[in-house]
Image (spheres, helix red, strand yellow):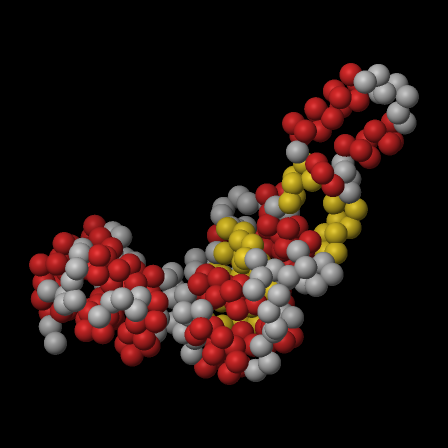
Length: 295
């Protein structure tokens, strides 16, 4: 277990050592979330590094990253726990086969069915039972209101009650990072429980720095050309899904894989699938690719 950072500057330095390059605002709010033991809610466009921050934090703290991917229809049981019904049935049959079923007290038999060995930890329960963990609740905006209310209760108390088992309380609450792509507004009650930060796409200089940090094998010239081209794609304002930093890295990695140290028009056109994921976007960009690569 690594020592917790003692300042925003230390957070920044240690995150950079993992390959994640935060700006001052993100370093500060991350430090405060750690120091105050508050969940950190990150909103922003897809690909701006929200999930990557949780991964970097887990590395920084030498803690396991436990990820809960939210989706429409997710409920508490899928996030919290389940019982291993096949093993419970085998246990009952074993008791019957040994002839102990008639001699075992009904309450004792029921209690044995809900022992710890039959409990299946889902992400939230696993994070509460870990002595040191980073819990990533990814894309919370995809879940519905009922799940958000359940999550608020868990985050407020750092404990859950399992009717057949009892109360599970975290000895040390996990570091919690929630991400949202803002496909819907989250409730104020959940936002008040968290510290909040909006993550924007990085500027050109920082995006080049990110590529150079994460992909040191990529030439400085190629890193700048790729970052500049992606910046211009975003600035056009007419793409269905503007590329994020993840796509910038994918494009640079793909070009390096092809042995390129320079981004030319033909190679850029052939590799747009690494950076754009909609046919309409590819068509729009391909029509103006010479202008995007100019300069």
